[in-house]
Amino acid sequence: MSAQALLAVEDLRVSFATATGVVEAVRGVSFTMGRERLGIVGESGSGKSMTGRAILGLVPPPGRVDARRLEFDGIDLTAAGSKRRRALRGRRIAMILQDPNYSLNPVITAGRQIAEAYRGLSRAAARERALGMLEAVRVPDPERVLRAYPHELSGGMAQRVMIAMMLAPGPDLLIADEPTSALDVSVRVQVLAILDDLVGRGRMGLILISHDLGLVASFCDRVLVMYDGRIVESCRASELESARHPYTRGLLAARPRIDGPGGELPVLDRDPAWRDAPGVCGAP
Image 1 (cartoon, rainbow, N blue to C red):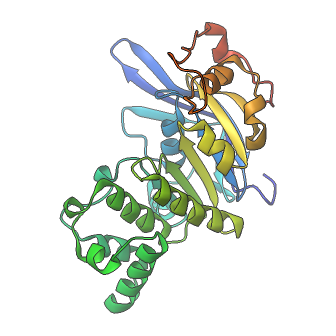
Image 2 (image 1 turned 60 degrees about the vertical axis):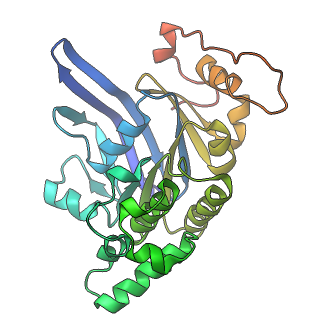
C-alpha cells in the first residue's frame, strides 16, 4: 500500500448461507483510496451498503466476510480481533447510516450521545464540545437540541445529530450511507460543505454511498459503480457523464430532468453479461 493510501480492499466478498444455498451480496470488490472523496453508486441491493458495513466489521451472522486484503492505515483488518476492531470503530472509522432511528439511543439525550466521544473530559467540557459539533452541522437552537431526546426531533434534525456524533471523534475514514437523504436541499449543501472541508484539509477520507449520481459526480473525486455485488465501472467523478458501461449509461438515462422531455423514464434492460463486464472509464 502506498504512503498515501488509507484503505486497501482486495477481493472483498460478503456471503450469507440460506436454506437454498449461499448468496453472495458482495462479489470480489477491490479498490484503494486515500484521504479523498470516493463515491459508490448503484441500485438498491447492488452491494453498496454491505461493502461499507464489511469494512467497518458490521456484517451480522450468518453473514461471512472474506478478503484477500482488507487493510486500513497499515492495519490488517482481516487479522484484527474483535477488541481491536471495536477500538477502531467510531474513533478512526465511522459510519453515518441513512436512518437515524437505528443509530440514536431513544432514552438518552442528543447531547449525551455526542458527548460520549469526549470521554476523559469533564462533563462541562464534553457538553461544550457537543454543543460546538451541533453548531458545526448548522443545527438551529443547539441548546434545545442538546437537551432533546431523539423522538422529540424531526427526521432531518435527528440526521444532523447523528452526523455530529460520528464526526465528533475526528475519524480518519468516514463511510456515509445516504447521509443527506433526510435533509432538505439547503441543509444538504451545508452538511456536504462540512464533509468537503474535512476531506479538503487532509483530515479524513470519505466513502459516500448514494443513489444520486448527480450528487456523487459533483461532490466526489472518484466514483465506483456497483451492480449485483461487483464494481462494473471505476472512473473520475468528472468523467461519470462519459461512462460507457451499459449499466452506468442506463442509470444516467433514468435520472429525471427538469428541462428534459416528458413521459416515462427509460427502464434498464439488464444483460446477464453485465455482472462480469469491466467498465470503459477504467478498470476497477
